[in-house]
Image (cartoon, rainbow, N blue to C red):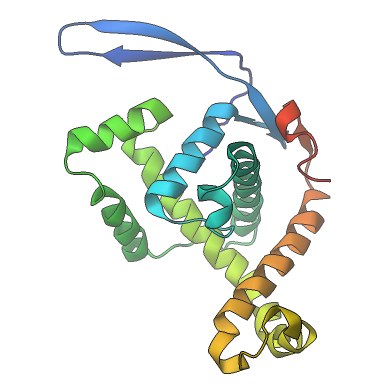
Length: 217
C-alpha cells in the first residue's frame, strides 16, 4: 500500500525497545504525485522488497528483481503507478473483489520465507510496514490482477495467434502450441503498455525526482 501523505519532508517514527522508547527522524524524498497522492523513495523501497519477498508483480518479475538498481527502481515506480490506477478504476467499476483464500495463500507463502515472527518483523520494520499493510497490499495486488486480466486478457486471447504470426522472428522454429504461454505474456505486456499510456492521460501525474524524470517519455 502506498502511504499517501499530504505534506512531507520529515517523518517521525517511534521505535520501542524492551527497556525504553526512542524517537528517530527519517528523511524521505518525494518521487511523484498522482492525483494528489504522494509516492516517496521509501514507498519504492517497500514495494521493491515486498515484490521480491512475495514473488508477485504486475510487470514481469525480471524488471523488478534484477539488473541496474536505478532501472529497477524506475520499474518499481511504474509498478506502483499501474497498481494505483488499476485499483482506482476497479473500485469505480465495482470490481474491487479478491478471493480471500488466494490472499491467505499469498500471505502464508510470504510468512513461510521467515523462520520466526521476530525475523518477519525485522523484515517489515525498516520498510515502515505493519502486518495489516502487507495484507492490504496482497489484497490490492489480487484486485489489480483480476481487473487487468479482464481489461486486457480478452484482447490477448483474441489477438494471440495473429501476434505470433506477425512476430515469428521472435519465436523461431517453435510451434505455436509449445510457446503460446510466452507469446501471451509478451502480448499482455505490450497491451499493458498501451493501457498505461492511455490511463496516464486521465490522471494528474507529476514526476518530481530527477532519477525518474523521463520515466514516461
